[in-house]
Amino acid sequence: MNFRQTIAAAVLIGVAFNFSSCKKDKCTQTMTYATYVPVYMSYADMRGGVKTGPAQPLKNPGKIYIKGNYLLVNEINQGIHVIDNTNPASPQNIAFITIPGNLDLATNGNMLYADSYVDLLAFNITNITNIALVNRTQSALPYNCSSNGYYADSSQGVVVSWTKKMITQKISEDCSNGRPMIMYDNFNNGVAPMTGAGTSANTPNINSNTPGIGGSTSRFTVVSNTLYIVDNVTLRVYDITNGTSPTHVADRNPGSLYGGIETIFPYNGHLFLGSNSGFYIYDISNPQNPNYISIYSHVTACDPVVVDDHYAYFTLSGDAPCHVNVNELDIVDISDLSNPQLVSTVPMTDPKGIGVDAQTLFICDSKDGLKVYNTSDINNVGKNMIAQFSNINSFDVIPYNKHLLMTSTSGIYQYDYSNLQNITLLSTIPVTAN
Image 1: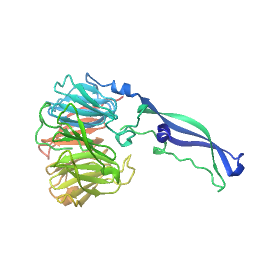
Image 2: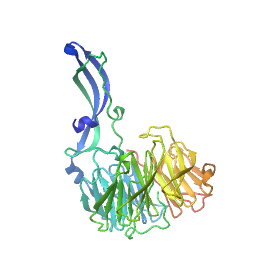
Image 3: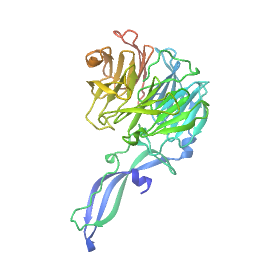
C-alpha cells in the first residue's frame, strides 16, 4: 500500500452491486466513493521558502514564546511573528519569519530553534531586525505525524492541503459466506486532517545567555544547552552547546506503550511530558541522558501539564482530536516523583492551556475564557476562583513576573496581575480575519 492509499480518507458515497460473476464463490462489486488526496509541496520549495520580512498581521496564531522584551508568536504552518514588547501596553509587531510548516519554537541565548515540517532550523537572532537562518537539519522530525499537524512523504514532499476526488472501482472477494463486502473509512471519518507555561522571575534581553519562556502547549523546550523536542511517541534530545549546529544525541520513547505525547514542561531538573494517556516524568540531572522516573496515568484526553513546588496541574479536554467526554482540571501530588497521587479534580467546560505562578493558577477554558484560581488550599481549588474573563476563547497562557500573556482565537491579550483582586488588561494584539 503506497502513502496515498495509507492516508486517504475514504467515505462511502454509493455502492452498486454486481453479482453477475459469482462463479466459484467470487463476488464483484462496483464501488463509488469520495476520497481526500494530498496536495504536496516539494522539499525544494519548502526549504527555499524561509525568509525574514516585514511584519504581518496575526491570522491564525499558535504557540507563544517570550524572549526578553520580545514575543515570538507562531502563525500556524506559516512562520513566526516578532513583536517588540518593551512596553506591554503598546506591543509593536516588527517582523515576520516565513517558515513553511512551522508549529513550534524555542530559544537559547542568541539562537532560535523552530520546526519546518520535517526539518529543524536554527536562526541567529542577535540582530532582531535581520534574523538569519544558520543551520537546517533535514528530516530531523518524523514523517506522517498527524499529532504535529502535518503529513509528509519521503519522496514527494509535505502535504499542504487535501482535495476531494471521486473513485469508482471493482472489487472481488469470496462471497461464499453470504455477507456483503464492507469498505471502511481508514482516516479520520472522511475528514481531511486539521493543521494544527512556564513561570519566571525575570525577563532576559533578546541576546542574554538564557532560554526563553514557552507556554503549556509547547513541544520544544531548552534546559542547560539541551534542546528537547517531543512528537507523538518520542522525546528527542539535541546538544546545542554549539548553538549554530544542533547535534542529535539521544531519543527516548515514552509513547511506545501509550502514544499521544503532546507537550513538554521543564521544572527543577525534570521534564514533564503531557500525553493523552497520562504525564511522564524524566530526570534530566544529566541533561543529555534523560532518565525515566514514572508515569501518572489518566483516561484518554488531551493533556497539557505544568508544575510548581510539589504539585502538577493538568487539564483534560474531550474536544477534538481527543473525542472523549472528560473536561476537568486535575491536581497531582508529586512530592514522591516515583509515585504521583491525585489530590483533587475541578470540573471545566473545555480546558486547554494552563499556567501557574506561586499559588496562582491560570486556566484557558476555551469559550468560558480565562479562569484564575488561588491554590493555597490545594484540596479546594475549585472553590477559590479569583477571577474569570469570559467571552474570550482562550487556549494558552504564560504567567511571569506578575505579567500574563494569553492567546485566543481573537488575539493575544496581556494582563497585569500584580494585584490579584484587580487584574488589569494591558493590551490586545488582534487577529485579522482572512
